[in-house]
Structures are given as C-alpha cells and as structure tokens.
Length: 495
Ligand code: GLU
Image (cartoon, rainbow, N blue to C red; front, side, top):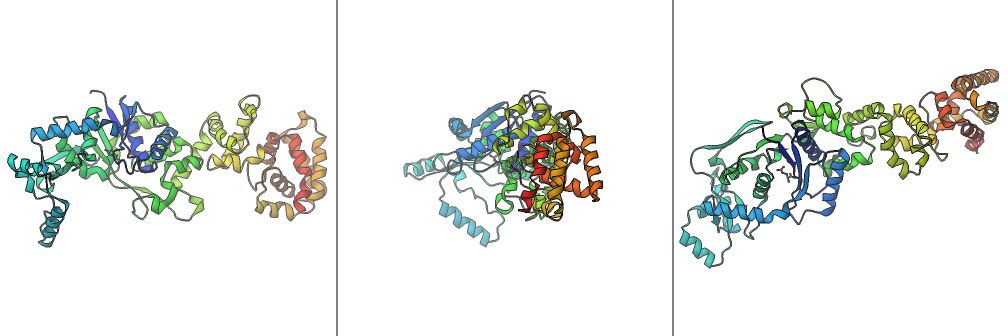
C-alpha cells in the first residue's frame, strides 16, 4: 500500500472542541499506526468568521494533547488559485454550468414546489440547458452567475464505502445541481476542501458525521476532476446524556480542550478518554498507553451510534464527565512521578511555589512529596492547592477540620507546644516515622486523651487538611523544624 496521508482541517471560527480533538486523535492514531503522515490544514476561507485567536487556540490545544503533525499548518486561503483553476477545469470539461437564476427566483420556485407538495425542492435545472448564445447574452447583459455542478440526470446512484458507516449511496435524483462557485467568483468550501485534499494527496478523509451530505457531492467532484477517491470515514457525533449535541452554549467550557488544560488534566488522560468515546477494541480494556492505543485502534470498531458525553449540570463533584475525571485520577496515580513533577511545575510557578532546587538538590524530596500526596488527588491543580502546606507556609486550614480537630479541643493550645519541645529534643537521626509516632502516642497516653485527638489535630495544623497520607510520613517530608514551628503556632487558631 502506498503511504497513508490523513488530515485534520479545522475551520478556525472558535475554540478546539473535544469532538474536534477526538477527530484529530483518530486521524493521528491511524497515521501513526500505518506509518503515514498527518497534515494540519486550517480551513480559513470563511474570512468573516475565522480569527487568529482561534487558530492559535486550536494549535495550542493540539500541541498540549500531543497530537503532532507531519505537515502544515497549511492555510486554505493560500490556495485560492488552485480552487479557481479547478472550477475553471470543471467549466471547460462541461461538468459545471453557469446559473443566472437570482436568489428571489430560486426562493419563489422553492416556495411553489413546497406549496405543490413536490418532493423535489432542489434546483430545477433552468440554466442547465441554456445554449451558448443564451449564456453569452446574459453575460453581456451583466447578469451575475454561479457555477453549478451537473448531477447526472440518469437513473443511477452515487456511492462510496464508508470506513465507519459502511456502504453509503444516494440516487442522483435526490441530489440537486449544487453550487461550487459563488456569483462573486469565490469557490465554495465543498470544492476547496476536495481540491486541497487532492493536492495534499490525502488517502483517508475521516471527519464528523455532519459532513456526510457533502461527501456524496464531493465524490462526484473527485470523479469530475479525474482524481482517485480517498477512503471516507464519518464519525458519529458526540451527544450529551439527553441526546443533545454538545456545545459551548448549552454545556459551557467543558466542551473546549482548553478547559481540561486549565483544570489540571494530564493530556494523555484526556486522549485516552476521547479515544474511548465511541471506540473500543471490543474488550473492556480502559487504560491504553500511547503505543498500545496506536496498535489497537481501528476505524471499523468505531461505534456507529452517537458517542455519549455524560454531562451533569451544576454538580461540582462532576465538573466534567466522571469517566474523564476517573481517567485523569488513574494517570495521576500511576504515571512515573518524574513526569508528574514536570507537569506540576507550571502550576507551581504560577502559584509561587516553584523553587529551582526542586530541579536540583531537592529533586528527590520534591518527587517523594508529590508521590506521597498524589494518592487522593483528582487533578494536577490539587498539588498546588490541596498540597500547598508541603511546599509553603502560607497554606489555608480548611474550615471543617479546623472546627472539628482544633477549635473543639482547646487542650491542644497547651499540648502542642509541649509536643513541639519533645520533637525538638530529637536529633536529626532520631527524626523517624517510628520515633515521632511513639512520642505522639506516649504523650496522648500521658494526657489521658485518645491518640486520634493529637493525630488529627496535628494533621490539621501541619497540612491544613482533614485527610491525607499517614501523618508520620507527612512529618518526615515536612521536616522537623517546620513541624515544630507549626505546632507552636497553635494558639493563633483560637485568637
Ligand atoms: N473544516 C471542516 C470542519 O471544521 C472540516 C471538514 C473536513 O474534515 O473535511 O468541520
């Protein structure tokens, strides 16, 4: 087989949508699997709606996901000459014709057809049979024209084998003579897209199901341009659990890839989630490494019915599809800690928590701490927020444990400074899990209070949190001096 060439051609009229990202991912997976190429083409011919900001956002989003390209970005507007040349070629070969019907005429005909309950409300072919003289006459009179494609008038069908949807066919009679060039001379998207795919030698066109109606027309354009057909594949749309198309207007930021970047997602976790949104290898495997997914992916196992994105409005525990969150948690807990260290660094820098020594002398401590605290976290953001006490002194103590573990036990005001002194008496070698635990428990016994009172109070004071890893593991990481300081500050809570 010759080299596979796939493409991702977003229209830069908004943010990178998770549905778009899934399309990019599937194309990328197949290109990687087959040792082929993936091309990024920005379809910016709608100059009124295309923005630089959107182009930047799309490219950044793909970069963040790790979906890399072998060629591009190409910009569709740079190839206008190709689009016009193709239109000219079609005109010369007689595959298209000039249509002089005005908007008003077309609208009146359409309304009449609807009123007469005529199922054929498409273009009626008025200009298809104009003679050369008639065309010349209209042009001489300065009447503007569009170019329409001559859909065969014969009985047959246009068809192709869809990689995902199977055989797709429609009778010619169901397709009207469609426009490929506007009256202002601008080729329509339908044509530009085909011309670019031919020039870029695309072998597989894999895109959303919403393009399926275009595809039958495009198949005819390929034939008329004498170009071989690529394989087409149309992916079912992504709907919410109420079967509505997911959109920023109704679902908010969660449909944008940027949201996941900002909310502490691990890029591969989102890819893994998107891969399974409408595709499975036929077993119940959930977690795929990049290499495994590239190997396992296939178009014919994409579900033909819509993918469901579980959206729960106003439920902060599930700020996005719970499956996506649990996917993120999985990677957060199992990824090599060095990689987590890299990913977290950006947030640490933004939150004034980053110290250069975490990449140098204290790297081991930094990674060990991340490793200890990651167990209960959901996103990368949690390290700088819930984990702040490990890295800085300006952490906040959560209200619930503050009330329950500190304010309710006034005795701690006296006990903690004493405990601090006992800890202070330990040499650095004696500062061990066993020793610190033994001292805390013996002290509780001496006082005649439950060890939990001392332990929970200490956890709250030292980390600001109600729960977390084993307290004495925590003490080791926070270090003797800081633990002592924090215990001695206990009375500030009662002020
Ligand atoms: N520019 C089109 C879109 O963003 C892509 C169409 C295609 O993949 O052919 O929907």
